[in-house]
Length: 469
Ligand code: ADP
Image 1: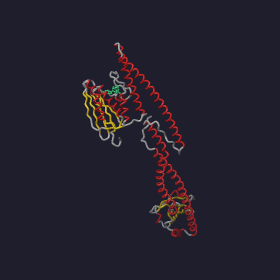
Image 2: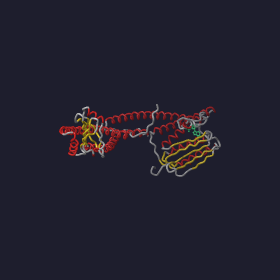
Image 3: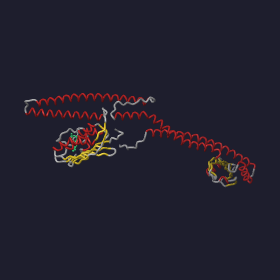
């Protein structure tokens, strides 16, 4: 199953958001518990008062006849404030018999289930929203006599005020607290993740070729300290392994070079000695050529691995690509003339880059060499140097055999040759070395080619500014 590539977010941001979220959820949960307990406490106290009001009316009711109850209810409500308490006397079907001043109690209905419960002898407590300003109230339905139900209502605004204030405070400070938790969490997580940043930059330094780089132990956290130690131990082993491999390669290459040079020299001497038969001469010439070719190949492979592993840090100096191109143009003109290839140079002045001149010369020379090598007699090769504010571009265009589209992605690989018949000289190393050199200089190399029509190889390098040189 394919996993969708989700956009990457910062771990520090995610952890600090999570931390703030957990903190917020815990605070909200605690607040809800306290809030519910406080509200239930207020209801408990108000219900107590409702019972008291009921028993007061009940005691007065036993003294007065039904004819005087309206007056009694009005008087009682006035004594406490008609907006604070309300009495309503109903018969068992809910028909109104008497009530106190109802001006401040609009919206207070008679709820049928509550009435039925009261009729059945069960006092019923309910909540209601009353008045124009829609305030909270508690209501009690309870039997007053055999056939009469008393509905008593009390406003709870005063009792609920501290709870409302608390709620207000919680939300105001809760939002501020969450922002604070987010910021503090961000700093804490950033600090905790700092050793990882350290490890990433060390790994990047190693990827750049600095095998000496090591992670500073994070003294505060034991786990990260262990990770840093393990990381450094791994680097020690890798460095040792690379060093051994390099030493083995170096000594092998050195020995091979010595043997090849000796063969080359011996064959040269043999060639100079007289008398020599025709067969001996041709064999010796082949020996000289083969040993020279093998020596060249060995040097290229060594150079390539040195560049790719970045074991030796390159020393860069300003190099004028226009001047280098003119020099190479002059160098290759004679070879081109032999094949009746027309060569042209379009140069630009002051196309300066920071680099290693001899390596850059080798890379660009390879492109020119290939252009002439893969262009049939009578063809054309054009060298062009351009530059803008940021980059210098060097391109070689030829009217040669071109490269098949399917071979183009591989021509920069080591030992790859598009010409499978191996009809021309070469080992498929030139372009891989050129690409490695250009990459070493922070540049890029591209090819555009059509089989049978020719190719364009372009190299783009960062232009050297006075500050960078
Ligand atoms: P080689 O030593 O074989 O020239 P390179 O690495 O220089 O090795 O080139 C790799 C392959 O790319 C060559 O074998 C050739 O097939 C193809 N190639 C390179 N340059 C050109 C060019 N200008 N025109 C046609 N083919 C080319």
